[in-house]
Image 1 (cartoon, rainbow, N blue to C red):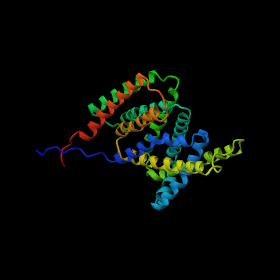
Image 2 (image 1 turned 60 degrees about the horizontal axis):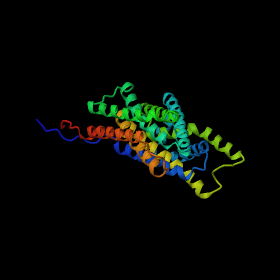
Image 3 (image 1 turned 90 degrees about the vertical axis):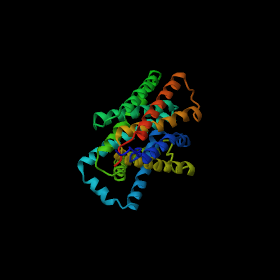
Image 4 (image 1 turned 60 degrees about the vertical axis):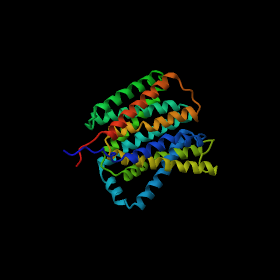
Length: 298
């Protein structure tokens, strides 16, 4: 009998880690654009994401893929829905960070992996091992402890978790490549985004873009920080089990949580520390099962 060999890392793992690392440190970037109203900032974020996507499409010669996606009515409707979900997610997240609700934002993305696991098992029929179910239960207890002390900001956490969880599910199921899909989503949102940016330009405060060079460049950078992690996430979502992707997502809110303590100076309550420890235990259990469980040699 051939001895089992260690199981290799699942496809999509590097892309998943890349996306969640960028999202985890995103609050640091948002500190530099905190003078921009959240609605206007999200509008500019969309406006500058589309040109970057089109440039990458041209470089990678994926024009045919983009045209094929645009001619698929069902895929197009799905991408309209996913574009709406990600716009809502961006707006609530930026508002939360700019208004000092860093822990509420972090909690939302702690809940999100549990939403992903639930969607993966109930909708996609994915199976979890016993250790993975144990990890989910431990994480659920940790999140439940946090929920008990966060009633007033619960809406922030739930909107973030449900919007991004459903967004990922739609992107996993639609038969469109990662880059063409993101390009279409950005195009769908472009008209309302441009109208919003124009409206702010007509207000007494004027537009946040075009008056200060450094701030304008930072706003343009928002397009890069939007497109790159979403592309990485979409690649990972198409390659990995959705439940596995959900558990890896704990990386981003953990980084945000630590930034809330250190950079944003938010106090850590004992109940928050307890939930933080439980969630990290859950991550350790899941990752141990993910990379350490042997499989029969081919």
